[in-house]
Image (cartoon, rainbow, N blue to C red):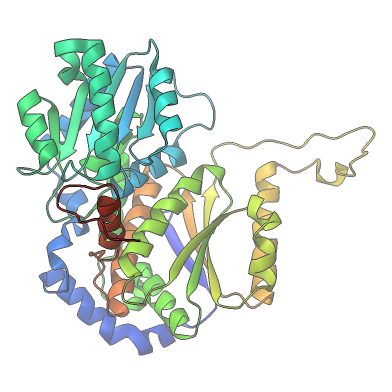
Length: 434
């Protein structure tokens, strides 16, 4: 049987990790399971893939089928956890260029405030048949709320009274502006569970519906997550790689390595880096604490950040994500003239060279004093990506708890929001003299 995910590292023995963190990890594990850990009201993600009902899944698939049949283009409106997870998985599992003929194009809005982006998106819609998925717990988050206001006007002008049939809202069960709009206008709607925060929500309707519309097999995605729940249910570090990863990160932080770089060699995995950065950045970056999450896409970044990683300040460690099995490959042809001197590679493929490049980079960075971790994922498909998503979520929660932090709040984001409301003269916010 192929193991979905393994963790390789040589920084410290597992027995040492068990000695240093074993008791603490077991205590945190038990507290999470009992719902007594800090922020436990937001632990709903922990077993959600097992708890989603057949009816809920069928409703999501049914709604996705309707959107796929009636739209050439589906615009997903959201930001942060309401955007990054779905985009990350879509990019990781979609062809680079031509989409499958039966799949509508899925684009995103509300994740920025660029007037040019929105103007060009509206123009791009053109004569395409359009549908909207709007995702917001409250319906009042500035960026997606503005985007939805613009899109709703567009849809009502174009489709009139039938516009509501082309809009799906994913929002709070009973409260908030978007819930009120959904009830008034008759939008099909799905619920963001109250006990799951945004950055942990990708395996709920927040991610599942847009992904189903994009043609991703969400049943396999959930199956991978369910397998991870089963595999990572043990409280012992020596048999739980999620807890090993969390303990390793905490140990490295204590040794002065306060930057983690997530590295991969698959271009389709780059948006996944962004989801990972939000997950760990918002969960750990508070009160002057936490590991700073950064990312590189190799081999591109070997020609930019590679110099710093190799020879800059020694405050970083690197976690490689590698997919053992690639779906496609491309051979390197032989050249009669061999002006580029590459005929010595003509019996190899691009994936084979990519693999060699990964090992070469890892060896160089290790020799340069960078602690290395490697996550070996069996395959880049829905099942294994679902497994990896859950692995990172559980690792992140444990890692934050080991640092004495609440993984589920984000008090730091409120300050910039208050400043924006003040500067935009939102009612109730006083303008301070500069």
